[in-house]
Amino acid sequence: MKSPGKKTTQVLATIATPLAIVALGATVYQASYAAFTGQTRNSGNEWATGSVKLTDDDNGAARFRVDNMLPGDTQTRCITITADASVPSTVKGYAINPVTSTAGLETKVLVTIDSGTGGSFADCTGYTQVGAAHVTNQPLSAIAQVNTFAAGFGGWVVPAGVSSKTYRMSWRFDTTGMTQAQIDQMQGARTGIDMQWEMQSN
Image (cartoon, rainbow, N blue to C red; front, side, top):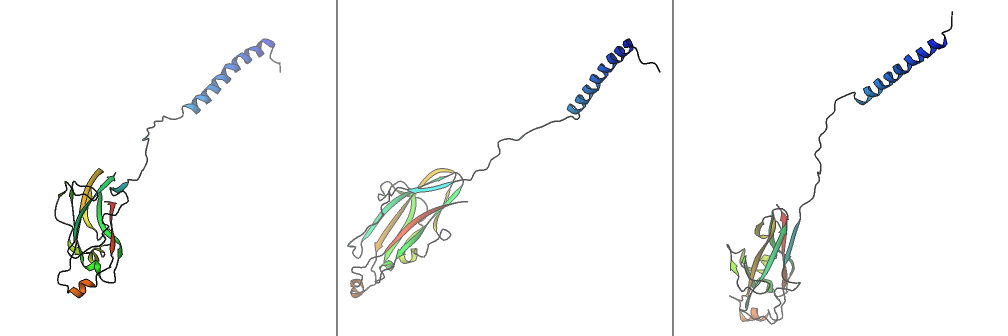
């Protein structure tokens, strides 16, 4: 068998090279464009909790500090509660830290609590009651039993945002129906209670 001549070898080489390039190009093309694709994206998803914040204008002071109280004495003072909520919430008031006296003074201090607009801490100037009273002539001993949010009074429904309400509290040292001896036993007695307002999201 005769070996291909020099000219024949050159022709074969010339033919083989383009075929190799075409074959390689076909492989790359097939790998790059094997399928149609399409995409869409919903970006920026995140989750954050709501917040509720409750403050008052007492600046850390007690609303009532009564010394040398006498039978028949009475007093009225206010406090403004401000709610700052990012979600609809409810505010209620209830009692904590009751102090029981040996003389039963907590049964003779009668309290009325209502709410409305105007007024400020310890000063009810400009206050206007809105709605019925939350508590009417109840002794401190009874108010002390209202000591959870679930049982709390008020039920102020707060929309999202910042809003305020003023609570007015009046007390009276009532010795009606007591004998002089019973009244005398109250001398030197001391009682107390803290009023707390709490806000919970609905």
